[in-house]
Amino acid sequence: MLNLDHRVEKLIFVYNAFSGTHNAVLDALHKIVSPKSYACNLCKLTYGTFSENSQWKEFRQKSNVEMDFLHIDEFRKKYASKFSYKYTFPIVLWEDEAEMGIFITTEELERVPNTEALFVLIEERLKI
Image (tube, rainbow, N blue to C red; front, side, top):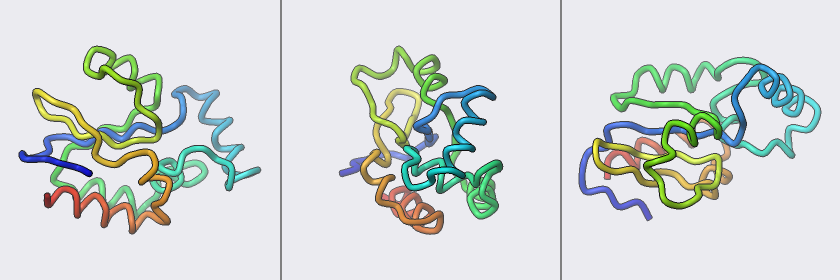
């Protein structure tokens, strides 16, 4: 269970995918050919096959919380010194100047049925 006793400064969304054009093309093909076996529900919720989901983009732009979006390799490079255990992906983390923690687990993300449900989950957790 999420336990925050302070304001979340930033949410870090980490996709279960690697960066780069080659990987983006392979991911898009996977989404088309075998969408049910695609391994990143966060990708499915925030992106279509080739571009950002318009509902998600609007939600993100209206949010009062800073959001950072990273692929696994980008996250590991940027935050290598800040985490002491291995995260599973996809995941959403919260960060402030001194700490980082899990905001939405991999398991929770895998159960989110649609983009609207992701909005509700994020908004509920930000009110804690």
